[in-house]
Amino acid sequence: MTTTPTHINLEYLGSDSRFFYFEKVVDQAFALLLDSGGNFTADAQPLAKNNRYDIILVEPAEVLVSQDNEHKIIDCQSKKETIIDDCFAQMSRWQKHYVDTNNLNTFADSLPFNGGLAGAFAYDMGRQLEQLPQQAANELPIADCVVGLYLSALIIDHQKQTVTLYNFAESAENFERIVQYFCGTRPHCFEFQLTSDWQSNMSADDYFERFHQVKNYIKSGDCYQVNLAQRFSASFTGSAWAAYRHLSDKNKAPFSAFMNIPDGQILSLSPERFLQIAGRQVLTQPIKGTRPRSDDPNIDKALAEELASSEKDMAENVMIVDLLRNDLGRTATPGSVKVTELFGLYSFPSVHHLISTVVSEIDETTSAAEVLKESFPGGSITGAPKIRAMEIIEELEPHRRHFYCGSVGYIDFQNNMDTSITIRTLICHNERIYTWAGGGLVDDSQQQLEYEETFAKLSRILPELNHPLCFNKE
Image (cartoon, rainbow, N blue to C red; front, side, top):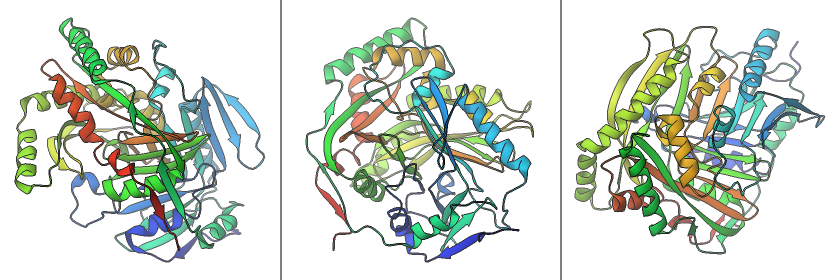
């Protein structure tokens, strides 16, 4: 017999519901907000069709943490740690265990998350999958993988205008405590202020030198495309949450997320989906091709039209589509890999993007974790061919990417998955804040335009944090 409620309804407060409720758990270890950006409309672009939901996860039963090539499971009640040898295999084991025990509450409604795994995967998780050189400085002592096993979820449905706290495990002992978190008092004030200027890890001359090294690799036949990024950092005081809340409002990105990880926070304002699995269908939507936005409607329209007709950007997009077709093909049923949209033009607050859609099908024996493993990291942020591009990135970028260009998302107990590519993403650690921006370089790339594009991608991030922020002050 179920000893705790299966679900509890809370008050819907519009698009700010995600802020109101997450602020009640924002300081909890491993608290995770999967944020659709606060711009739900019934006629949203196809990319944003899941903007209907925000998901808040707190108090996982167990957590998988990988750092410095040590992988361990932490029992969040007993604090017992167990060393394991394969993160992706462990995720599949978790799924199978809970499904096989048949000890889960099920719901008639089709939910975006039905209990399961959620968290963040660093770009550097790729080192567990491929033999890569160790050249970029690893100066941030943070994890490469933080994935929780969440048996409860607060799901905000903007179409039905409901807020529901679900209990997926019949024996979830901590559910009543989680109820009290969300029914409790919200903290009053969150502040954030930079205490230094933003500083890049590359000067313009440094970037141009690396740009030409990439061009030389392309001309010599090593690769077709390499994603080259620069990193910005600054000191700050206050709450990473205040920075995230402001940036979420300004960017309205459909795959945004905030997560507390050991020794820091991840703040992601990503517009890019990596992998989605619904039923047996897999979908990926790579971004390649960018133009800045303009406040002048005529100039903005011209920039969008220029992107939509750019042969260079379309060629760049096709290279990555081909790479992702190959990646999906590793787990797909024969003949199921298809391109359903090529060069879709999507507009976000700071940039226009070209986005394509590739789909495949998997059989009933293939887990979502296997699909993630065989495609990780996303090809849109490496280049082609993938492994050689990653080797060049390791050589040319001064510092590791950590969670930039990794992924955030979930795999639920029904084997559904939705994950992002963590571009437009920041990391807070030890009162320093870090963010990155890059772009795919091909043979006909122009150095000044590519350099300027990195700043265009951060035009709703870097300047937005240059002034003090304060929320909920009475």
